[in-house]
Image (cartoon, rainbow, N blue to C red):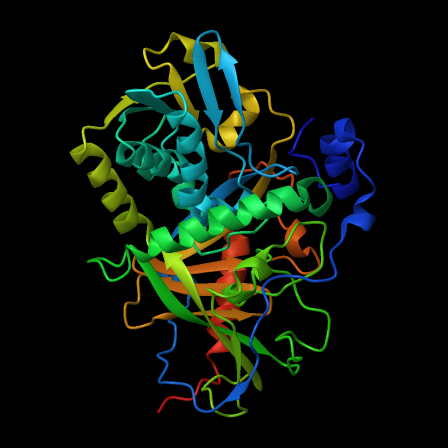
Length: 416
């Protein structure tokens, strides 16, 4: 099946789920989306520096293929000869967010074999976090990878806290997976907190402003049908559109921020209605540096190697392998259930005086240490944005259009 043809949602998901005999997707929709939120009217917003969004400030355009599995990430085990393989891949748009929690699950299964040393396949955020987690459990670790962290698909991602973004479809995931997701999300949230305040801000929080021409309801959404977003998670400040995808944010609403609707005229934006939330995000370069430094200082080794068949893992000297190949698992493990979800981000010159995010007219922007990131979404697709698209070539016109939306958002900006 080719993923480069125009997207047909029914054909794509139907093909992936045929073996399971699932009910129609229209019956899988969940009426409740995202975390419970607090929506209250508050007064003036603090001083906000305008974003300098213009196409001549674009310094990079990145395309990421997020590895989505309808059943949720693969976390099972199998034996290849005398080698125990623990799978840890297929997290959709939640790889960064669930990295520590899924590593805790995988390393726990590895520890049951009482190994002195383990191998980790892949050096993306899931593989590198799993390797560090295994070291903390007292194991010697070698990472086998085609590319080091800074060249993996992980650093082409959005890098925001979105722990249930395209994590699974509603029906196949089920209640048991919901409980596992909550375990992973809570463990990850607690683990990320240890990186707050460190030099370079590897993990950080920022206010997210959503601008609208329509008033927000008591649930924090516009009165009209919301435009598309990049995930299901309420505290991202992104819309919570109904789709076939599972949503678990309510399970951790007690530890994650809610929404605040700003009083009319209290924010400097031209849009009449503004909603604010706070969201965690990751600065790739500094966060990756901390993880890599810990891994190497604790005796970790990296061997550049590409695998072509699963049986090759049985030839490794380590007899316990944590398998974290990301989207590459589709070819390596012939995993036809793995579906690519394309996402593109434009990166503008860093603007350190700006420390917030913005969402308006299907475009999001977030100022990070390594650049002002802008991502555009096509109207009407919602969570289906990029599903089934395996094209990794950047589309500059798409990014320029998104930058122009953000530029116009500040044309009526009030300073002072």
